[in-house]
Amino acid sequence: MSTSLPIILFVLSAVFVGAIVWLGRSRRVAARRLYRRTLESALADGMLTHEEIEELDRVRREEDLTAAEVRMVARTIYRGAIRAALIDETLSAEEDQTLARLQLQLGLTENDLGDDSDRLARLRLLARVGQGELPRVESPIALERHEVCHWVVQATRAERLELPRRSRAAIAGVRLTVTGMEPFSAAGTREALRPNEEILPTDLGMLVVTSRRAVFQGARRSESVAFARLQHIMLYADGLRVVEANGNESGYLLVEDAEVTAAILLHAARHRRAEIRPVHRGRSA
Image (tube, rainbow, N blue to C red):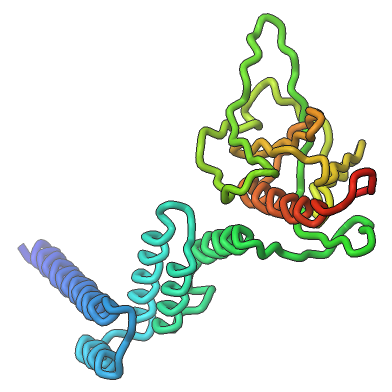
């Protein structure tokens, strides 16, 4: 009897402490939910007024929320807004302005956004490229006079093998026409090249996109395609291929972000074609 009593008391104490901890955690969760509802309501019209800020501060004090908890709520709301805006993998100017304003009002830095920051930066880049604002980066190769480097990415050159007793079906990709006027879009069926057993990597190097040409600088060989000769680009899930007006096709180029690379390549080529359009025949492009 005397032995079982301490055990019973210990169990009851543990249950009591556990209940207190559970109640404490439940209260913290409820407090954060209340603050989140208040903040979402305040942000419904896209602007935090002075009165709404005071109300949020009152809720924070009454619920004894820490600065870390307040930031957690703000981060959750902002990330939800990012995912809602980017559900179609595009970012309009209006959506970008709304997100930037929301980030400022919530007092969040890029570090607060985690992986969403990289995704947002990528789609902002695509949006700028679509508007004709091409990036400028340092070139690893010698450039001609007035030539500008827009993009450098690690690339693996590959060829397609002829396998015996195997029908050679086309690899599904999106065709981007340089002479066209339609906006860049990666929508459509795009197969991955790397898992395809017919695709054999042959060289490792980098793809350089300038204002005049696309250059593959490899360990074994280098290739350059002037935009004056570029007809269209085939975009795949993890790579691309350029096709010249005379029908010549480059090897497959496997790159980390094929969509961004293809967008920059397409718009750089279109810019160049627009520049040389008035050039008389016979003159070099």
